[in-house]
Length: 306
Length: 327
Image (cartoon, rainbow over all chains, first blue to last red; front, side, top):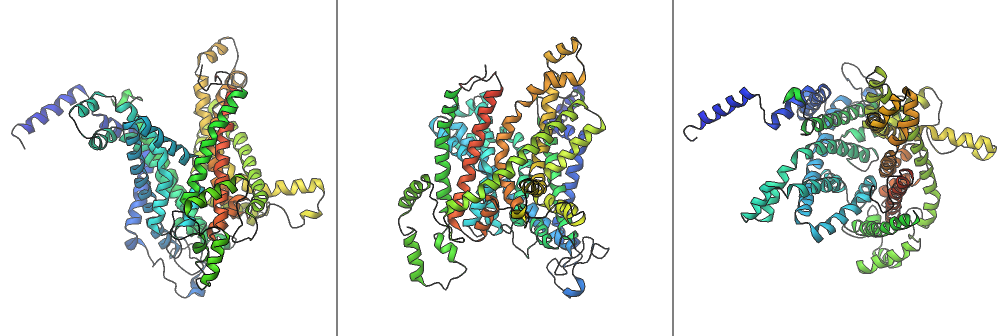
């Protein structure tokens, strides 16, 4: 560290404290934390992610183990089996934990991929403008005109759906709205002075896009990203429910709900618990997205926190 | 007005063309061809037979020729023959699409009636327990996956209470019923599937409607109406509601693709004889001509839906001039 740097920083932060100023990021964090629903949703998600990560430690039973089927199957929820057992006598609590791994990771990875593709596509389109922009946005128009679920069904129909392929299919379906959105942001950002300066310095286009434009448009992407995770998890669950996504015996919340479909009258718990977890997860993601939107919106300046 | 509609129709043509083209080439992204895909489970098929099927269906020709052929036959309404059902896809579509449209239109009705009334009540009683209950309820219902809601409704209303049937569009003795009985029977079978399909949309509509109405209630002409002595519900009914409802039309146009997607799952669960279940079965059985055709129909319906919404918007809102800009 350069000599004196420490002193400069402390003077700087001292000055800011005196005038009560905070960085936009600090303001956003404070606003988010003041939103009780969003904060609790974040805790719920943290617990779910932790439970998924620690599934091998937390699961009381092997999620795939089939023991003495006739003796152990269709057991209602009890202390030994909090979520009951399924038609093969497998412990549903353990399966739900492992299912969380599949459902959450597929949803999050698909969102990351879709957001990356969409951001890059939108940024390139918005930065270059003109004919490039025109052609690229017409492609987005066509893509958006597709009912998303039908597009997924079409793609699942032509490819063998394994987990990586499924992530790719979900992402391929979901990127266009992000692209359109980022393009709009870029159109306004690219006229800013700092981008003009970068151009004047002779920086290549890819550097301007990746280092200067996309970071500037990133905070709204957080909001769409949180919503997209919910969309992706829901879509994966829907496909798996139909038998077109994650196939058994690998548990995902969607195929677990489907597994209880035929025993609904006699063993309601098989479908109930994974679906309830799914619902809680989707609600939590959309509340976090709401919270982020309110917290990150620089126009909604709340006097209390500035 | 007519000019505006015609212009919008003309704009929809390249979009539909793009969708048709994208459908065709996406379906050909896969390695191998449809015959390979379809016959995969039964690998022991005689290669000569495979070759013959391929020739019969023109799949031995280069891709761009196939594309042109497919385009011209689709334009004439000929979507080939289903691998699984051994019938022309056009006939299968003619049987199934009306069922899906019935389901979706009924769901849109539920969406509108329930969503708008809940949104209005919520906005008028802002900050009360009722408002919070509606807001929370719509949040939960919006997030809830349709297939789970469907199973839970079946569990409650069919299995436990025995009020509604679990599947099919009509009862077994439908043919013997009188005209009124037939109508009742159809409505009775519609209740659960339509609830599942319409409730998520109603939740979204309620949330949107609440926000819009609160915005409108803050406008000056409402204050003016209050100053002239109008009170509470009269203001909402006579002055605010119409303006708040206009943007809902746009939301409707956008909800069609969601409904089509939701219908695939709802139809599968309730054994509803519509296009969604047909598509799911086709994907499971790799019935490629059907997948192509239903994807196309769904996409075209989506484009027409947003077209209708735009036109409806122009009809209802006098501020929209027909060249598309706001005055």
